[in-house]
Length: 488
Image (tube, rainbow, N blue to C red; front, side, top):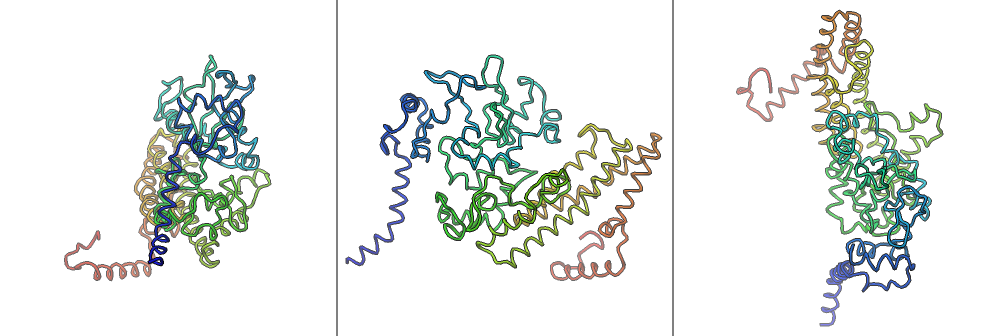
């Protein structure tokens, strides 16, 4: 009987621990721990906000800041001369807690973040994305700003925080937790983009949903790509085994079910420290029309930077917690091949044609004022990015149907016919030199082997091989007698 009871206790122990943890997480902090050890100023804040802002009060009570005796005043205190400083009761405070403030304690993390691409995400003025939100889609009706950029673009990229003449925060720029927010104190970024205030949970920052606030949608669907991948499938199936609250959180030691976004791009391994520079392990940049190795532009400008080979080596180090050397190397060869195909077959020719048409006045300098500009934008900014990102994170549907299929469809059925239409229009307008230059370039591109199927100049041997493959496929799956000669 004793053995039976002991075995039953062992079976119930995980449930009892979970129940205790859940109960603890719902217990008011005033019951969990006394508040007498906090500063007098924070005590004054608490005396009011535990009633008026009880949700914030409870979130803070479950944070590591609470356990470290870091309170409201310590984070929000400001000097009277600081931009945005305001008198609140007996104190001078700042509503916005910037990375500069966080960096007073988290020095290393703030320094790493400041040199990351995330910190520069707010610098989007002049980009095609910004032109869409501010001009094409939007209108200057909300404090002289477009509601599209205020509610859309800037909520991920970050606003440039401004003050109204009366000293209040400009409602077009606040509230905002965009990752590249430009703050009143000159610092860049928002720690609360990933570490939601006032809990600042590392477990939350490690979950893919946190990154999914911004990294999803038609032009950068990393969250959806992750969900489709084997990594995402394993994460959601085994999330209880992920040990997300671990302070160390080393793959292969503290968890082994799956990596998350944080695992690959930020978190520590047996050999690597944590980094808040999310590009530190990325070897390709997949954002622009033509992918480049991530350090190429910096080196061209003469900056000393970590090489793409070093970055890839660090990412391989992450992979090695679960995968063998040969598997990792073969994955990168597959990934590189897809990026190279996209670049050489579609992106470089597209850039060349768009540049030539601009140079010889077949198109204007105004963004999105002609159909061909919309088509080209969809090719690289939407479909092309999806294909490349899908390959980078092992999501086959995004490589194929959401990616290269749409790249090819737009390129052959829309982009090329639209270029030809502009050539004819240039001829009629008397721009014969421009029409010839663009026409010659287009024909030179289409003569390349990768476009032979489109021009009908496939080598006889290759044509016969494909016809035989198609015939055998039909025999396997279809009744050939019922098929038309063309189509299927």
